[in-house]
Image (cartoon, rainbow, N blue to C red; front, side):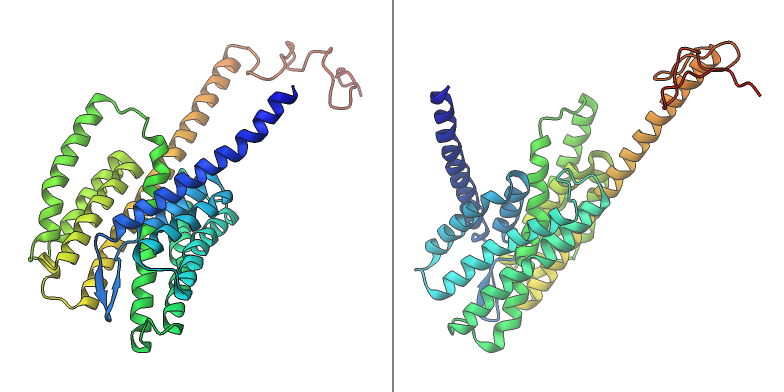
Length: 348
């Protein structure tokens, strides 16, 4: 018995170390992916979408607050791949760790559910997990850059806004996809697979056209988004939004299509308005549809239970879970009430 306990005591730290390393590597990989595309805003290079924030918040929601060292380690890996450790790097490290941790604490306080099956969960992720919590990373990061003379004072607010929006987009676009990845094992009927394949083919043709055409055809994405939300709910709409956001980011960073003749600030504003509208539409519309679907199923189950009760009453039987009654409509005399006194017929 002592050997078994000792083995379990050694296994727990090993699992924690492996999970921490996995979180750090996931954060680093997402960071390298985010660095593939960047924009120049007020003389500073920023990422329009920063996936590591979405990865960090998803890991905290799925595995708990104990995974914050993995987030800090992953942020350190990303910083070291870009520059040598400095005082400003320490501030960026603290901000990038504190922001998702704060988002997790805010979401846990309001009873957030990772299945995103309620409208309140979608709203909480948008306003608490993304817009509110990411103020921490953008503020700490830009302040540290300004204090160490890495950022001119005239560029502070432009860089701060770009930093905040990029971190928020990472949460809005990446976190819901990772939260729903656990349900990827759910199988679709053959007819739904054919519809999903048709939707994928149409999206593969229409989304590149809408994001790379100079005719400003981005609105063509929204019918696809609504179709995906209505038929495949959150999984379909989020994947569609993710695909459109990635292609729009590629077009913006390459300065093609509707972003060709815009300045750096105008490209950032146009791109983030498009990505934000996509993410909000996909998340909130799917949450509303899922909530209505769950409500309808609950009503159907209640109606079915009511029908079964009525059938038992019509047949003269006791409803399930209730004691039988005698011919006079009273409970059997051997039944007792809550006080333990037999239920005898009433006598004046």
